Image (tube, rainbow, N blue to C red; front, side):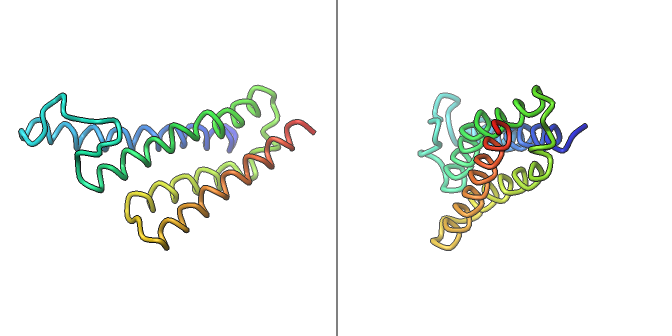
Length: 134
């Protein structure tokens, strides 16, 4: 399995892990009677700040998956993973760092660090696109 395939599966697994965490907490809130089953909003705005950040971190993964996952999938389909393998695990790491920071804090320093992790992903994506089309 190429590093690109590992990173793609890892990205999907990380997105799923955030979803499972969110739905586990939501299930607890329903079962404990703290929130009715129909009392959730997509952004968790009626819940704790952590749950709001969790919803946003998951949404960020969903938003990024078609872009970064699509590039990785294109590289796999085109048998061009030589272009993406070198940075594939770095991209996955940057995504996990971005999400983790998002879950932990919204301080100015944390937001700057989170953006840096996202900017790294964007730069990798641009590099990959040029590598694939050249």
